[in-house]
Length: 114
Image 1 (cartoon, rainbow, N blue to C red):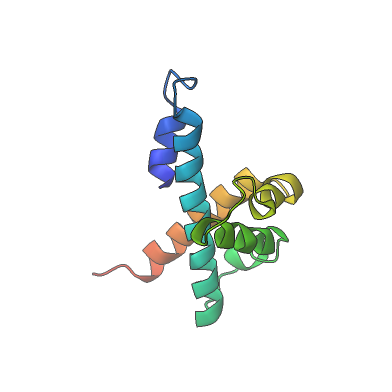
Image 2 (image 1 turned 60 degrees about the vertical axis):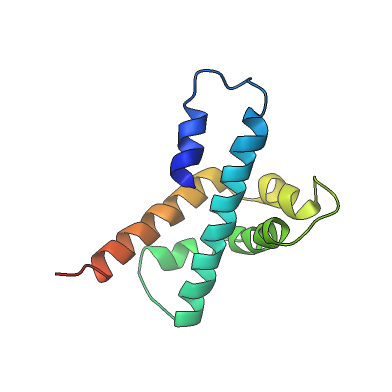
């Protein structure tokens, strides 16, 4: 989803019909999926000195609520669960990208098949 999202952001016509809906769809799926990874990380009690401080951020709880908003029906399109992450989160875009990259690093290092 991140790749599709980045591809849409790099398009030369960001004002075409449906662009906002499409980018929001990919971003929402990516963000919600990232929380699922965080949830699994915590349940499996995995440890990494770079990832652990990232997961102490208040953004984790806001991302959990965002995930619930994405994966469960919402009668209101602009539900508080979506708005809360963007409005109340701390450097959300940078934080999400960093968490995503660090999970990628961790799993590539620890799950490498030789």
